Image (cartoon, rainbow, N blue to C red; front, side):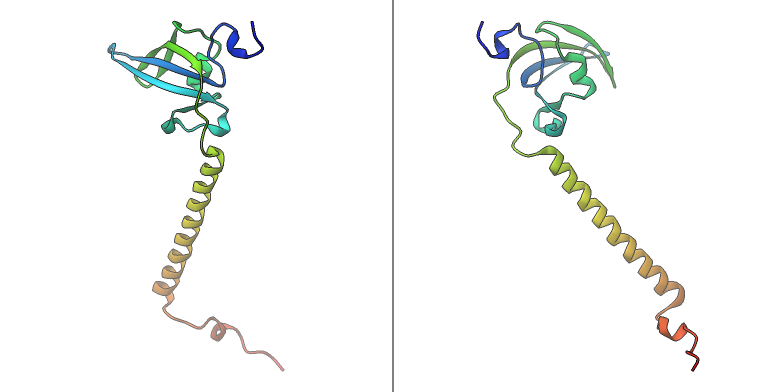
Length: 139
């Protein structure tokens, strides 16, 4: 045996490329090929499954051929078809991308709040000069 972890018996772990067969309640089957990555690099739509997700936790340390009971939505079972070393790397830092999207949403919400407040003040009180409402200064 060599020094690489891939010389060990093949089980699902971080860095694996895994082909799964998802089985639903009616016996329907769908195949997925995913790379198991650290949670910070997770991007399911790009095929990167975070190691902390329920699906990853269900298949971790399991060999090819394993059939795992897995209840999520209408899925009842997961079969591990194939395991290989991943040859892909997440091209973006998924955590940073999520943070950027979140920050953009917060900024957009803040702007909408400002506009709503301005419209509320304008509708309720009309145009006014707030300084005119202050009491005159005493000498």
